[in-house]
Image 1 (tube, rainbow, N blue to C red):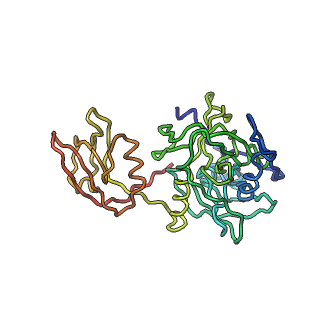
Image 2 (cartoon, rainbow, N blue to C red; image 1 turned 90 degrees about the vertical axis):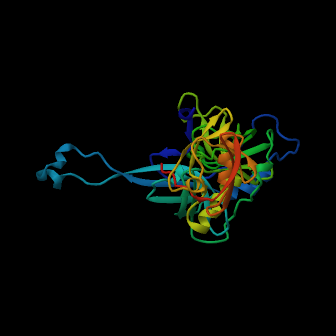
Image 3 (tube, rainbow, N blue to C red; image 1 turned 180 degrees about the vertical axis):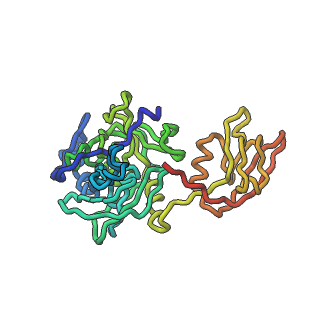
Length: 347
């Protein structure tokens, strides 16, 4: 299914910034109040920004340029590639949360605010495994988004996606929470997406998904596209705000995200999760865990699935003690280890 998923940052060819306009698209029946969700939009929209990133890519050089006599005649410059995404002001002191794929490799990042102001931004840190990034603009007193508990969302709750699709300007679309806890779609080992039918298009990447009170519950990241194009079919995926703000806070504090790591490869077996491999020099190796052991629980929480273990390890900090209950050749035993820092993935 991974090839059917598309990030929703929009490559652009250049030109001026499109004037900001807020368009509210209501699909389905509107609530009884005359102003619909205008109060929620008024609360959230000032914190949503457009992000224009540019990077220099190598230009094609004709093979003749390799000859010494022609080198002076060949232009040795790259070409500029631009892309567009969205972001959300997470703190009043200029920290902006967005998707990593919006700004990855950028040589220049320009942030455009709803009031028309523009500012250069610098990368504070990125987390490729969750596809999140934090950038910062100079200044203070910015309108910041209000945080909500994404864990409290229920399927059927109304949500609004805010961003800059196709560079038309700030746009709001309405939908519901279609599902929670979507995983295994090939985006990240930490997949835990909120699925929504709110319209999400190229340019929406990094923008917020907010609840009916205008509080942020997710970061719009992916769309499902059956034909492999950039067009979605009403299935979008957002990173839950609980995870997004945890990444934000770690990056601001440390410049990076560190997660606990045991150092084993697991495989599903008839009796549970089987240790397929123990990496040398890891906490698992030091604790005496062996290939063939069956993991029953970590820190008292049952290891019922690969997903449960991944989600558990996501919350464990490096250095924290791990108590692992396992079964070996029919006998249950408990081992202890201190979590190491998980090696950082690269994309």
